[in-house]
Length: 257
Length: 277
Image 1 (tube, chains in turn blue, green):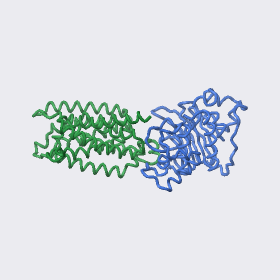
Image 2 (cartoon, one colour):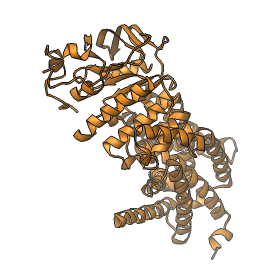
Image 3 (tube, chains in turn orange, red):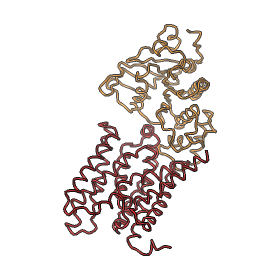
Image 4 (spheres, helix red, strand yellow):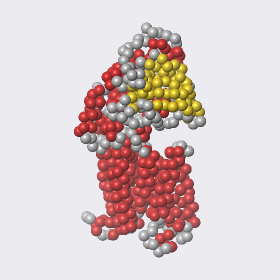
């Protein structure tokens, strides 16, 4: 097992060990049903954490709780020392691709500027264009700027959304299955890009994923959630004992994307 | 050549009111189309029927000698209440939006039918409300449409950028700090008012297409949401003008001719898209 899953991530140095994101005994109840309980884990500044678990385990729900879109029924979530927030200067969010209407009449740059302003733009100012182009360059997507959203491929669309999340210069960035809808060839490249962005900016990152490739390319730490926290460990501690494969369904690399 | 404008006072009223409501419908229609709310538009149009019937039944204008107090002044608040009801039931999760529409829609029509039947004297010009009638448009309707256009214009000037963000994605808009539910109620209320004001021109049965077709046509031509709205407004105004003039010469209910004119534009644009691809 460990030969098949090489550990590619170069460890970054976590100077302070400051916890930028901390779950302490969190319980989440939706429609009267407790879907998550005793959720305790943390992300330290500059760390890349992968969040794993079977379908329907409530991984996306955890991200929404961090953003303050829903309130835990017990326990506390602390984001940069404060309560859950969707302050875009603190936290960037790349939603699941299937959640958004691809037919919306807009260009990539409009979508990025909308996040920068908090309002949909009618006219884009030069300084806004400059910032948008800078983040598009980070995701190697300069040529996407004036493309309509419907014309973007799966991979391009994800790059556009990553640029969108980066434009407000957040301290934490969250990705919800960023490779969904991206072809097999593009996935490895995408994960490398995410890793590079997080490392270059010393961003703290939290990524929901099903993918072994994703973990091998990005994860410095892994948390596995199914009802409660099944494991919170370094990736190399998880490979080999079967926990990881059994928990993510045992379909092999990328099968569930 | 311009006899449709010069010869009759009623026609000038119909044209002025028609162009104003045509433009307003097109602006709001941009959101209706983009947010897949066509069924909500349909539901509010039927609520407008209930509201108009309530107005006819109460008949406040005749009773108190207020000639300007037509049934639309009852229909507007009634329709706003229904719109807010639909929004509230949907937002609170008691029923999905389309279920809520389905319920309010049929209850309003049922109530309208009862009221129309029990009214004394009987309602003789029901077709006017169902299919539109340029003869029925009065000077007060023009003033009402003008006031509403100012209101819609101000709301768009203030909230366009937020409403556009909500149309793109509700959750991302909320994360950017936009008060999504409040804007839902605003859009629904504006739709309710504009739909009621459109009833004279296009009638209850056809008003939802009046909302949708200009925006749906504009959407086919590409560009940003803003350019879609601008094109929709131009189309809504031109289509209304063409339809009203047609109604004047051919002597059929104006709702039918306006919608056919707009549908013609939609068909041509679709044909152009198919031909080009």
